[in-house]
Image 1: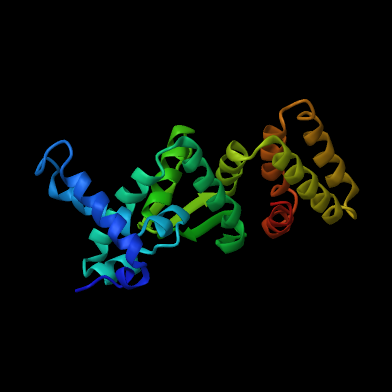
Image 2 (image 1 turned 90 degrees about the vertical axis):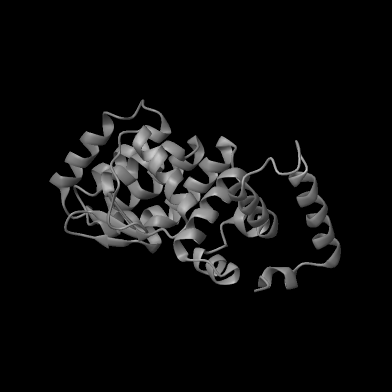
Amino acid sequence: MRPAILDQLPAAKKAALFDELIEFLATPSFGAWPKREIEVRVVAALYERELRDGSLSVARLAEELTVTRARGRSLVLEARTRLLSRPEDRIETLTALLKRWPEQAQVDESDGRLRLVVEDPFVRDVLRNHAYAAGIPLDSSFATELVTLRWSDYASLLASVLPAKAAEEVAKDVGAAIRRDLAGEKETLAEFEQALKKWEKRSPQERAERLLKLGVEHVPVSTVVSALLSAL
């Protein structure tokens, strides 16, 4: 079956890909590469743009190449891992996920957990590596693509990838929203301000993390999420 992507490429691009593939197969000598490496190389060449920007779904790849979903998932993971090998590429990918998480996730007000479907296996892999390195547990026991995070763990992850200026914006907007919500509760507002004051001299990232965690102890998670989305 002819992959649909071939009909979307101009003749010059297809010719260039053919030359690159032949050069790859002949280096260091013809027959040196195992079948799996050749498959990943072909997928990376055909879908490079979509693999880089994350727009290639496992379902589309599996359908176009007539392979199982499990095999398509493995090909996407390996191809994206090779194309996005620089640390800055991985941090950018993780940051994009964490910024959209509150908007697209299901938020459980009772326990402050966020559940999100993360279909891209590469993004899940980057998320797991970063979270486990920081000692943060991820729950994907129900289904591989469904990832659950506690709000406190989400706050830690987000703060770890935000630059100082963005962290300051988060702290400012979320802090303002919490104060508005607590305007009629003077004692609670005073407790909040007192707890936050201890973190005045910390880094912007540490203040943002603390404020996100502290906020949900005083106001609904939805209030903090709305403010966070406006800041991001």
